[in-house]
Image (cartoon, rainbow, N blue to C red; front, side):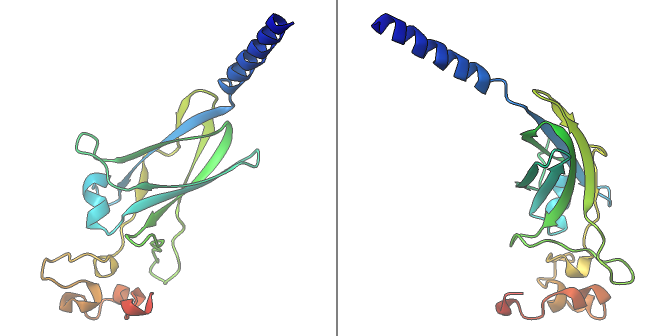
Length: 180
């Protein structure tokens, strides 16, 4: 009887481990660069982008929300990210975040928000799929609202006399102490 229980437990354990290895997951891979021609390695810091937030939904009702560092590495100038999700047809949106984790909202010439980049992928079990289009190409913020000292004069955006009169500085928070 003891021997029989041992085999039965072993059989259930083996079945459970086997089922765990047969999950319905695959991965998607996305790379990104900037419309200015810079890869992530140079473009992220130069444009005040700290992280990329990826949100997604599948036609099966699954959702995903993950944040990854923006910068690439020397041997791969574009940023690259691979993440596991359940199989299915996915639509992803890619959001640029600043160093505080806040979304970077770009505006068109009429002051309307420019939609975030989107891409699709058919994720297959046990495989890695590139999103389409690949790479994602981000448009950087204007120099006078990117949180960077672009002209190396020790002044940033609203504090920089070179940005006086630039319409993009009006979008910035005038009082950072107020938490905006």
